[in-house]
Length: 412
Image (cartoon, rainbow, N blue to C red; front, side, top):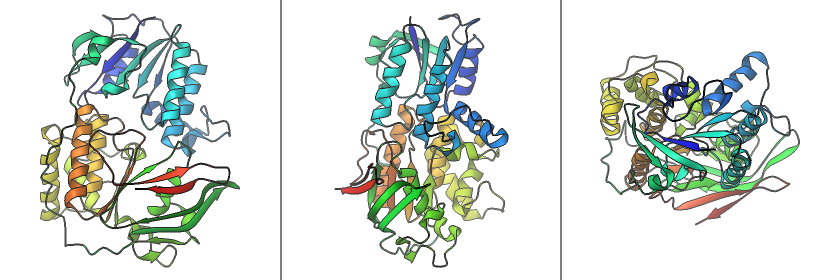
């Protein structure tokens, strides 16, 4: 069985390419898929199944504990989706960004599962980062920004090609938006915080302080409670009430509103991509980050427009004069990261921000974050299972699972 890889830039429309694969048009000169039963592993598949759960109470993909797909973390979703797809015994599987949001242990299980079916199941891997190519791939099709196949290489030759690698580039960031901010320290303080769901311990005696100007990476295996911890910081988790938790100088549950908390935070998580169904312009998407709204419902000020324009110039020509829905999946992600940064909040939370980014845009992201960490007095919490070349958080908070719930440790 000869397996194929398709190496894409973010400007290419992977929705169209994947549709072309299943229509037996995009790969017609390389493999004949007519009459074959195929399955798609993709974030789009996850979104489709979660929508089925919400609208029709139809639960196709569940965990061993019968947890629904919608209740899982992004890494858990991918893990259980792959298990479900393999159980359907397809003749071919299109694997779109197979390693996104997964930890090393899950990646190893993924590789093992695919190796076990590789002799009988055709694997077509769509990937954006050179290092993500599966070892079983025999031939790689390199696609350009116009969605044309510009080269077909044996996998050994592809490994030797030059792709965009990270280089330190000084980025001139747009001027700060609004007045100079006065920050209260600590910005966030967990003091012996424990959380459980349905009598199952999730977090155990967490102590963690975040000060202005600190650059933290939050790590831990899938299911260790990272999403729970972040949701307590962003004000979205009722489990934060009654805890010894300080958010921006105020103890949680002493009269603050969720909007009081959110205006202090710039936030990106992969689930936000599916939430934005409005077809706003890129400019309005950026401005909505200044006013903390999903979409733009007010007439923007001249200052807000100038700020958004400056960030559009930074992102590049491929983002200008477009609507959100005209952007590719990877471009939507880099836009949402910029949207989180634009208001220069006291705390910037980036949850798996490089998932779906190609090598070029990942390099742009690294330089953006490094510039912000160097020149702006704000705290950053960066969550990722993937080491990014050139991105070096100064501190790490690690969640270590145990039967009593995950404990935390600081690594300096």
